[in-house]
Picture 1 (cartoon, rainbow, N blue to C red):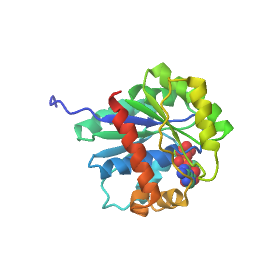
Picture 2: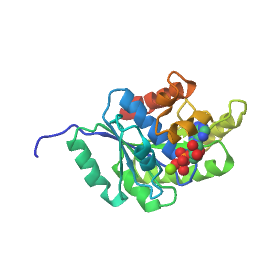
Picture 3: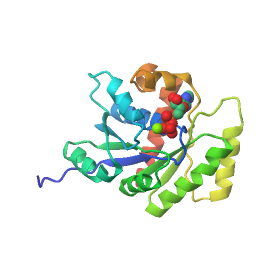
Picture 4: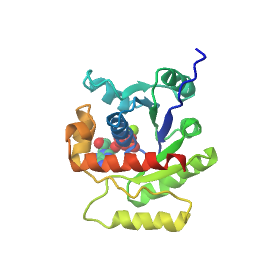
Length: 218
Ligand SMILES: Nc1ncnc2c1ncn2[C@@H]1O[C@H](COP(=O)(O)OP(=O)(O)O)[C@@H](O)[C@H]1O
Ligand SMILES: [Mg+2]
């Protein structure tokens, strides 16, 4: 048991608000990670277990990403076991309302991914999540989700955050558009990459994944 295993990269997808796209992003980033050749794992610490349900309906031939549900308090044990089994990328899907669970996940992560819809309520909600990331001393990146092509809201939201946090904020330059295929893919136990290969959603998730990954060692 003493063999040293390579440490996994651990991302928490986090927001204190429900419905912003945490589960959607965790799933699609984990599928993307798998497509890039990683052994990816989703750890679902949300009692609503949406990511776990996705894993349950997923084609059993698709070995990765693995999906496991866990109490936040067990995260370090689960991660240790995963690393011993050569899992090299981990995406933690977190619940919206438990500050404590979010804290535990933040502390164990290398990076925190904060999805945000471009509206006033979600913009307010990210302050809390950014605070959590800062207290944990972890890098974080805001990813705008479910934006409308035809609206300038996402540009305004981006400006509002940039003005507020100045240079102390990392906003992913690639945004995720509101697309029905995100809903359909999850309902089919798939990532958008599998549901609509070569589709626009696959491209944008690929960009977001690359951005998050590239900035890993910042
Ligand atoms: N980019 C998107 N386009 C269309 N629907 C989306 C998108 N992102 C999320 N959704 C839908 O919004 C709802 C909430 O997303 P979800 O990922 O479950 O949020 P959270 O995990 O933060 O509660 C789900 O029905 C999901 O399918
Ligand atoms: Mg969720």
